[in-house]
Amino acid sequence: MSSAQARSAQPRTGDRVIRASTAATVVGIGGIAAVVSFRHALEVVRDNGESGVTAYLTPLTVDGLVFTASMVLLDAARRGDRARCWRAWRWRWASRQQSR
Image 1 (cartoon, rainbow, N blue to C red):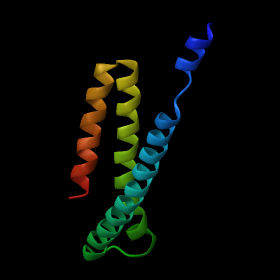
Image 2: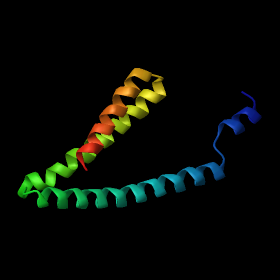
Image 3: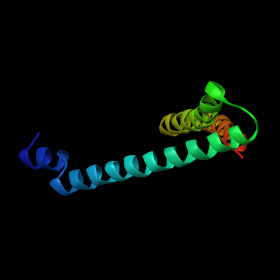
């Protein structure tokens, strides 16, 4: 490998800054969204008569299903598995309907 090829294979400083700032923004906004989603779902569950541990676990199951389906979608898309993508989209849609 020539030195020119080695330099082009390494990420440039600007690319690293872009990746790091994107990751920090996604984590920050994702954290805010998780708190808002959890609080809203907890309020809905409590308004419908649940209390204690059940009231706190129910929002986690809904958001957990959405997260899991999203990861399956990402994996299937990376592998080019269209059938698995379709099943994951249906799973994700069904889990979001649960939170309404």
